[in-house]
Length: 448
Image (cartoon, rainbow, N blue to C red; front, side):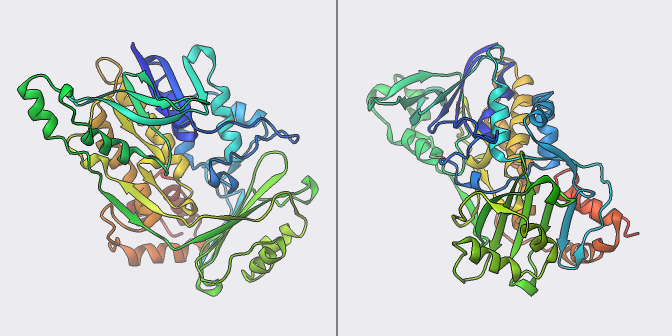
C-alpha cells in the first residue's frame, strides 16, 4: 500500500477522489481553503460561500449516481435518511422541450432530490477513521514540490491558518480537485521558473530539466447565459406531483430556460437562465414577472404556493473550459487533476457533479490497476479526456477544439421534435442526457 495521497480541494470532486484512493493509500489528506458549515434548524447543511454555485439547485445525473455506487456502497441509504427523496427521471418529472412536454412514464432511471450541500455532507460523513482520510479546512495551497531529475511531484507547500510561512507536506500522489478556480496552470509554470543551480547534479539531469514545458492549452466557450436562483419552502399538501420541472430554451420566450428541483425537508430550488441583455431579476417580484413571461402554468401554479426562504441570487456568467492536460508530453508523475479543475461545464448542463464522480471512479481503477497503487498520472489524464468528451459535447455542442458538431444535426432535431409523442424516444433522450448512452444511440431509438 502506498503511503500518502494529498487532495487539493474538499468539494464534491475532492471528497470523491479521497474515497477513490482510500484502499490504495495508508493516508489521504484533503486540503480545503474554506470551512464546512453545520446543519441548519431544518436539518439541511448551509450553503458554502466559497462555492457560489451551491446557491443553485443541483441534480446528480444517473451516470454520476452509478459511479458513486461503485465508490461508496450504501451512500444512497444514508442520503435518504437525511431527507433526500428518490424519483424516476421520467415518471416523476415534467420536462418541456420546444415541441412540448415529454410523456411521463417509468424509465428505470432513478435520481435523488436533494441539495448539493446535503450530498457533500454525506460524502464527509462517510470519511470514518477506517478510511484513513483526514480533512484540513482553512488550508491554502502555495506551490507544488517538484523533483526535476525524475519529473515528479513530491508534495506541496501550503499555508496554515494564522501563518504566513509555507510548510512542506510530502506526498506520493497529489490530486488537484480545486474546481474551476484551480491555480494548477500557475503552479506548473512556477516549476519551469525554478532553475536554481542546486536543482541538478549531473549532465543528463540538466538536459532533462531544461526540456520541461508545462504550458497548458485551453478550449473556452462562453454560452452567453446568465442565471438567477432562489430557494422556496412548499408545504407537503401544496407540493406538485413531480420532483423536477425543466423548461428548455425556446424562441417563444427569448431562449430563456428554467428548472425547479425538490430538495430535502420541503425545500425547492429554482434557477432561471436568461441569455438576453435585459437586466437580471434582483427581487422576488421581478423574478415572478420573468417567470410569467414563460407562459407555463405548471411552473407558476406551484410557485403560487411557495414561500421564498432565500434572496434572489445572481450567479456569475457561465463558462465551458477544457484545460488540455492530456496534451502535455511532460506531464509530471505523481500528479492527477480532475473535476472542474480540468473540464468545467456550464452549470445549466447539470453534468458537473457527474463528471467529477466518473473521474473519481476512473482514478480508483487506475490506482487499483497499477503495480504500487499509485496511478500512472499521464495515462490517467489521457483516459480522463476520452471519458469527458461526451459530457463536453453534450454541454457545448462542440468538439474538444471548440468546433461546432454538425453531424446528424437534422436527425437530432427531428428526434427532439418527436419525443413529446414517443415514450421510447423520450427515454432514449434521457439516457443520453444522463450519460448512460452515447448520442448515436438516438439513431436506433424507436419513435413509436
